[in-house]
Image (cartoon, rainbow, N blue to C red; front, side, top):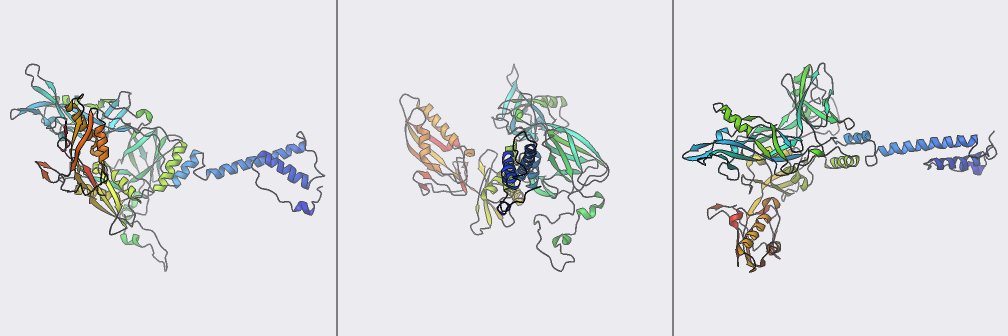
Length: 614
């Protein structure tokens, strides 16, 4: 029978801060048994039956505390340890988990076409300069497989450019050219192997999930059903539009091959990567294809104000980008066979160094003209060779847990919206190249309208010089940015100004050095310094840097008469930008400042970099 506790004992407060076995045991013994049962239980020997029960209760409390702490820690992404819980946080925050990534790079392709005599000139027979279709299979020296991502059209090679055309075979007797090699540069390739699988689908099933049997699926290339419908991958099932490309038939088609547009996609799916198995699943929507008219052609008035039958209503959200939102999350395939094309591979092993991709395993080559000799066309195809001048990089293994956590947090902070001026610059530069390449971009808040963004952009011409972006390119960029801009933002596209410069200098050369060689090295240093890829919009010229650059050349004793001028318009038969710039007025403390929306450029390095040596 328990002894009644005194008033002092009853007022003793219990503590709930114990977190481990020893603290629980001490609490039970010191603050409970000895206080409330001092006469009933007095044997605190470690080998006693009572102490066994005390330790059992402390053990239970320790375990409950441990699992409580663990569950609490797993509820936060920063402290979660279990992968399944981290992925739940990822889905909640809109992050899409992925597995291995594969190396990406660019290669140079070369074919050998026969020679032909035209007007007493021996030239390449460009009739055989056909197209190598995307998907050509290449192999690196380490055995890794690569595939081309775009068509390689050799008919676009400038045969007057000696850097792209060279004699590949000559007649041993007459020494006349028999064939020419055509070099096509900068063709995008990606490590991996394309595979195809099929799925048979019968009855209607919402959120149908189909798992591809292969592991390490890099991307789903295409999904088509037996009725010829093409299914498009979206980021989430509520997204009912995707970017589409339409061939550009305008005058700037060589620079901007495609026009960017938005296309509604009722046939859509999402992909989900399972980190534990390494497999990828395709998940489709909930729409029943038996009611296409209602699902795909809704009444816009029904969707504008959802207040039918209500006397009062609260605020509601709308998407100003798309009023054609359907009542389903996309259609589900019914009674059809799906053909899925996908690419597998990835990992660190796919990275390849420069000049490591050298073998063409398979390709589809088409000259277009069926009247040409098939045997010659076959020889031209067999002459196809490849070489990567730069490393193919980007391949990596599965994400580690710390990396996954950081990417989830970064993805949530970004929210796929352009908020800062840096966001607009990054989005502009990330537009797919087939819609035209933005070379440089500069953004700032609008001068007249603070809710607008003034985005100054530049492109490149066929010679690699900075050029004004074409109308089609700016139209594509406007469409592309429309999906990422804030509702209250207005984007005004401007042409960045190109300030052409000419540099003249003189150097005093040591008598121990050859003046011609020293001057050549000085010119080469300046050419490398003014490579346009190294320059940004608004970047100033530090004249002191130029002096140090020239003074660092072996044999140079001093630099004098270094002047920088601004050629504009047509000068000595050479065409420059029409932008005029007062170099002297904008020079301060030996620094030539550049306008905020302008860039310095040396248009003709061999003519506009002039030096003398004494």
